[in-house]
Structure formats: C-alpha cells, structure tokens
Image (cartoon, rainbow, N blue to C red; front, top):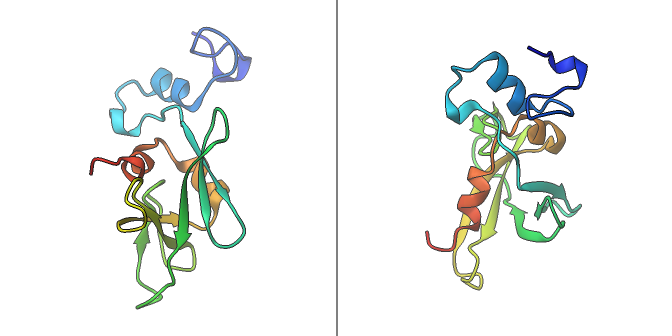
Length: 136
C-alpha cells in the first residue's frame, strides 16, 4: 500500500485527492460523505453577488444575489454548500433566478461569507444542481 505523501495517488498515479484518501483509509465511509469531483466554483463579484462558474471553461452558470438580512441577527443558519453552521456574521442568504422564468421565480441558498473556506469544505455540487434545475 502506498501513502498519500509519496505522490503515487490512489487513482493510478499522481497526487492523492481528498476522495482517494477517504476511500483508501476509511472504506466504510457513507457515500454522502465521500468528496466528489466538483463541476462548479463560486467567485465573489464584488457587489455582494456570487457567480457560479463551470470549472472547465469558466462560463457563468448562475448568479446569486445577496438578500438583505432581516430578523434576529444571532439566529443560527446552516450553509447549504458545506453544512457549516453559524450566525449571519459568518453566513448570508442568496437568491438565484430559476433559469427560464425571466425573473418570476427564485430559489434561495445559504452560503458562508468565507468563500475559500466554504469551497474547501464543500464535498459535492448537489445544492448547485438543485438551483440550476429548470424542472423543479
């Protein structure tokens, strides 16, 4: 058996991915907890919005607009992307137009303000797939 540090990754060579390490050392891990290859990345745009981009070509798949906070500021929220919990100081609610509805329908998502940390903790694209689904 090779170790992750020697560069002979579990996928037939190269560097070990998070997925390789989990499957190699923790084979009984529930499928939901095994990291997957991410198809999307999230980029801050600067006006409080976040763009969901394809990792391959960088094409914008969706734009998330920040929702103004209201209610109890100490209430706990849970990030839909990485499952981290915290107050509004650390998380924000975003809305995205449902594709093909021309602004008539929106879906909402809670995400960490620490985009880099959230991306590092995120294990799949399931919440983003739901936002991009036009059938729901």
